[in-house]
Image (cartoon, rainbow, N blue to C red; front, top):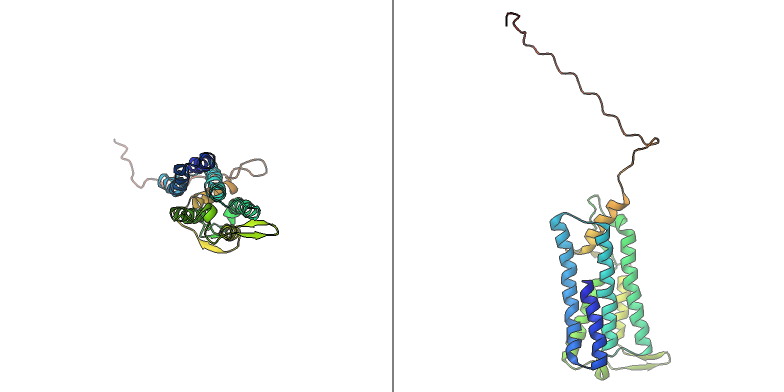
Length: 231
């Protein structure tokens, strides 16, 4: 997941330097692959019945790269480079980071008795892949860069492409209090289980909290069979 996101960022940088379109196509293709690995991560953890706080933290960090920074880098690379555009892309990344931080901090409160989260607050950050797919389609129609869909506005604050407002809406939805159903395959469900387990550690026995004593075993009932003394 994280490798795909980082690879997409580097591919966009290479596209901006060389202007070879294959690098841009490669960057677009890597992010759906990152989404696949993100889903597979949770499935493997449930299949093995194992989870850890380290895996949960790695999952969140990889999501920030693949579904926060990488989509913003793609938007910048294909033409959203105006002053207002850049501010919106930075806002989008900040919303993704805040979304994951809020989930990690409140996972235990949102989980039920089994440790599973029934709903999310705000849209999950992997939904940003939808923006990437839209950009990929527009690239096939030659509606990026100088021919960007919906044109360009010149405002007192700087250049704004109206398409950048989709990034603004996506980021705002992530940090909203909108409740969205939790998907069983999401890695965040595994994260919640790990967080709940970590937040409720096993009690340690000490002088103030002694180990409970076992009740004495009940005496065995006497045998009703009388032994023959002649044997």
